[in-house]
Length: 168
Ligand SMILES: Cc1cc2nc3c(=O)[nH]c(=O)nc-3n(C[C@H](O)[C@H](O)[C@H](O)COP(=O)(O)O)c2cc1C
Image (cartoon, rainbow, N blue to C red; front, side):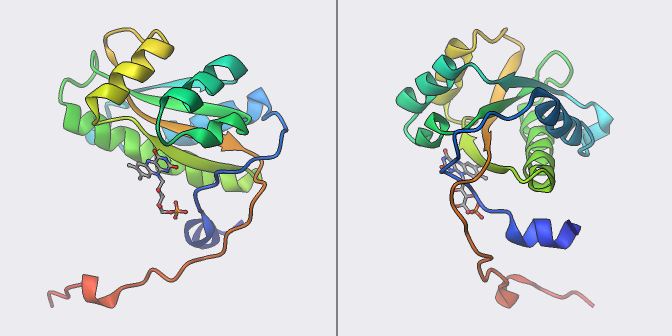
């Protein structure tokens, strides 16, 4: 798949086929994440690969916008590592870059993804930290649902020339 096709065609997938995602494929997605740019190249992230069905269902029930986890084969929890980078802003930016790499890279394997918001909402940080018993230095930024899509979405028109200023 060409990179521009991945960029234009990536959509949030919220319906998945009941098919497990192989562990080696999930590790490859995390590897994509680890190649994202990070401030001062700190790579201040930590990834949890989650295939525990009970945990996925628990998040689906307790998080207000995570129902798709009931059908997703797995999820990747992207955390900032406060022991590496103390500034939360950088943790969030670095992890967001990793998330985008994972979501685009997933398309190559025929997988769909959906970002489930955690950071910066305190109640969701607490919820996810408790469900996955995170150590204090792991700040959950985003949970990515991953699975084989059971819905098709087209490429939307999003080019907005009025949002560009040329300085020449
Ligand atoms: C920071 C962030 C938080 C998001 N949180 C959620 C969420 O909690 N649940 C959800 O279903 N989608 C969530 N999304 C996905 C957006 O709704 C989606 O990206 C947006 O509507 C554009 O659609 P597309 O991803 O199909 O292009 C989130 C996306 C981002 C970047």
